[in-house]
Image 1 (spheres, rainbow, N blue to C red):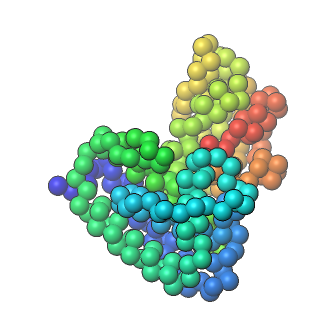
Image 2: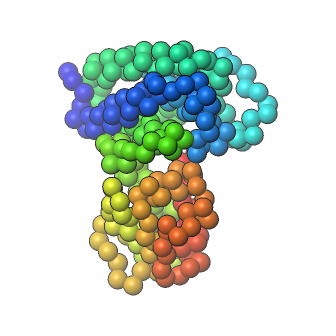
Length: 274
């Protein structure tokens, strides 16, 4: 058996992003590995270490036995502590050690994907002992690796791949969170609608409708007379949704209309990644 067709887009997105990451970091000099990225507390080296840690767990490798330092200001909750373990254990690795491990990891993961014959509904282990379907695991992983590719590009000043296969996986992952952001977090009024108009390499128009019970649903049809509307470019959308910039830092790249308090509340709660 070969990879299930439902899973193939996620495998393709991961492959595209991980190869892009490899190409980005292979020529770096040692100093470039220490550049800051948009992820708080993480350097280029840390991002690559994190990505390798994610793939290591997808392979079923045992997690490292390692004690985290107590002075990591950016680690404030259990999820962050979990993710930091794979990063901190590699923090003193040299550039050749990191790139060699990355290349070997890519070979192993490609082999795993070629031999993957489980159904998308198969249950697999996720972070912190959670359980999820194989499809959801691969979907989240493809999104994470693409997002971190963008972190590396921002740190290294090499923009690109905003419309790659991973970008479209990211779009769907982030859009799925919009009803919660609008209806639950921002507390949009019942029987109202909020429109998001996103331009750029990945463009879309989406409406979140809030019903009389206060439940939000995502629709592709535009709304007449929405309570609020937000217009922004795709890169800004991603950076806000992934917590890479604040609404204040986005500045005039976000145009709002309608209820200003509702628009501000949505932007305050726009970050949906852990």
